[in-house]
Amino acid sequence: MAKQNSFVKNLKNINKSINSLLEQNLNKLKFDNLKILASNNKTILTVVAVFIFFISYLLVPKFYKQDDISKELKNELLSKFNLDFTFNQKLNYNFFPRPHFTSKDSLIIENQKNIAEINQIKIYISLDNLFSIKNFNINEVILEKANFELNNKNSNFFFKILNNNFLDANLKIQNSNLFFRNLEKEVLFINKIKNMKYYHDQSELKSTLYSENEIFNTPFSLKLIDDEDKKKLYSKLNLDFAKLQVENIFNYDEDTKSGSAKLFFNKKKSSINYKTNKNYFEFNYYDELEKKKFLYNGKFNFKPFYSVLRGDVEEIDVSYLFGTNAIIAELLRTEIFNNKNINFKLNINANKIHNNRNFTNLFLKSKILDGLIDIDDTKIEWKDNSFIRLTDTLISVKDGKLILDGKSQINIKNIQNIYKFLLTPKNFRKKIKTIDFGFSYSFDEKALIINDIMIDGKYNQKVNKELNNIYFRGSSMQNKIYLKNMINDLLNAYVG
Image (tube, rainbow, N blue to C red; front, side, top):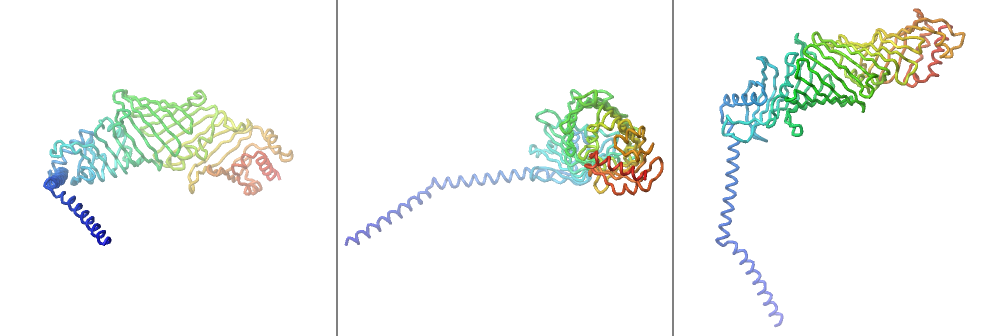
């Protein structure tokens, strides 16, 4: 009986729990809750309506006439960037990821001539005033795969663009080429524009150009800031591969422009002052730490193009010119100078050679002409006993290695002093006036091969046979004992 009462009691508790659950859920179906549900549906419908309206708003430019769009965009581009565009194909409109027009095969016209052919242009417009085609506001333009044609007459094209206000609009140029030609329309060089951007620099509060480029297979970056009020152009050039950075201030107020630059190379700092006009470029270059000991000057003439550089140095470190990682050696490896349109001369006088007291009075004479690079007529003295002259030289890249081939003549002033220095046995001490030979030197391996030795104008077969077994490397050339023994062995072959 007790068990039956307990069962009935549990049954009532379960029933009570079920009733409680039903009441809680049925309360949700009251009129007030139904009104809330209806209100939520209105919110959803409103959101959907707003979304549809917004998409419709974005699609408005699709319904404008093509001629009207082209005219208004051309006017806006001319107003913002002072660039005269021509659209040869239809302007297509897209609103994703943001409203913009695209077109193929466009042109930039200057002085009634095509200055640029553009594979694709993208014109991004503001979300404001899409209902009015006359109120389109361009906020960014991207030119892709464009080819620019420049020469001396329009060489300041990219610089002039900086005169515009980029406060509310940017201009980008990507994956493009700049062809610079002479008056005969021959290509002097091609500058690859990987990524170029004109924008308003918030920190400087001025129009700014930043560009990543490549010229003669040499990558570099350039940043320009134009101060139109002061008529000054600030620039920063980076050659990362050569660890060279150049910061420049250019004054362009007068007919003959002037400027000054600071150069940072491998933690060394130097400066250059220059002036230029449409016909020439002149400069003076010096080490700020040793102004009197390190001075170069030069001139680049534009009509016709040629250049001459001269330097007077108390002491020169040749490794800075032709060392494994030297900037000139790096540039030579890129074959940047293998251009028949380059006429270039570099002459350097140095009283001393860094880390080598035996060699003095170096006169380095180099030139680039018709795509060939040589250091003919370079001279150097050795211990006041002889001087060495190089002829028939050629600097080239073979299998990726920088090689100097040429001939050399040694004119001996005091052969007896040389024999004393070499500790040459007396029976080998024959009088010698000149030594001629051919050579090949690898800058990368620091290796030297000598051939075809002629002593006093005569070819000696024994000496040249002995020479075939000799291959100079960096370590052996710096080993004085090795060199003395080797030269004495050659003298032995010559006398014997």
